[in-house]
Amino acid sequence: MDNDKIKQMLLDIQESKLEFSVIMTGKESKRVNGLYKPETREILLHNKNFKTDNELIYTAIHEYAHHLINEEDIAANGGREPPHQAKSHTNAFWAKFHDLLEVAEKKGYYKIDLSASPELEKLTNELRSKYIEPNGKLMQEFGKALIKAHALCEQANIRYEDYLDRVLQLPRTTAASVTQVGMLPAEDASLGFDNMKIVASIKKPDERAKAQDALKQGESPDSVIAMMKKKATSVDPKTKLEKERERLTKTIDELTHRLEFVEESPCKSVTRIISFIKHMPFATAIALFAITPYGRCTARCQINQRFLSVIDNVQSPRQCQLFLPPTIGEGFLHARQQEQRNLHRTIFYRAKQF
Image 1 (tube, rainbow, N blue to C red):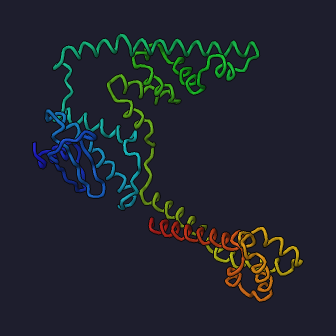
Image 2 (cartoon, one colour; image 1 turned 90 degrees about the horizontal axis):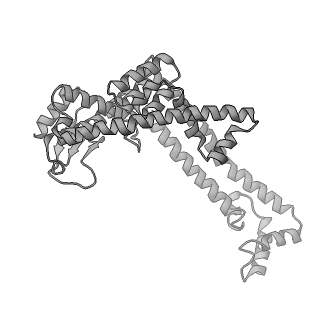
Image 3 (cartoon, rainbow, N blue to C red; image 1 turned 60 degrees about the vertical axis):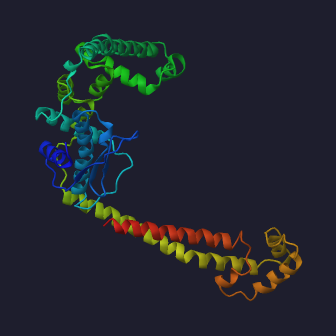
């Protein structure tokens, strides 16, 4: 397969209005089989990693799922490039990827054929019959036993939480999920413990039944979770952007107000320091200055005299910086200036999001 054929195959699986390119690097990589670059919208495939086209197609569909998620994010963001999240393999991604694989199987582009390996097919049946389903039954019995233990704790006036923490030494979250599984019908044990937890976490009976049917029909757990998360009514993109604009405007207003306060407060605070020092007794001023880094130097007596003689002539905060000890003047002003810079950067970043 070449780059153009792979791209046409991907577009046939699901159409994309956002232009992208497919590039086989001709390299082998020990770290990844492929990569999607959202900035340039390139799908890179390290084709030397694959023995068959089937393996190559699997990775191509994986990276194409990233592209389609990126396209959805851009549309939801009003046509602008959204900030890319550090975590790209989300539940929504895996649900999209598995949906694409199903379409690819139906169209004959990709297949997962266990009959090609009779030994693997036999082992798969054993895994289901000897481990997955028995584990589901065991955890159901475990859940029912915990329900009974809860009732007995109440009869004996024992706190169930303390019983879990210090007697069974069982995490409360684990106990809660196992208890929920214990209330499911016995036939759900064939789903396995992890899938049973998904079903048990769904409160509405009709939605729980849909999830059970989907899992029994072979849907992946991620696809079922994504199906349950879908909202009944879609949010209008225009309304979503208007709300985002209101939120950003409010944030910028709050930051601007804070910046105005920060820019004004150093002058006011230093003026108060000057006034405070001017009204000190001579001995108190000497003692205050003596504990500062300036007061501990070898020429302390000379600097102390300079310090006290200058106080009466100080008229502005800027003049005050010439002699105030760092612990009182410079450190205070440095902290304020740093906060000013941080606020300026934050306001600039928020404004760019409009």
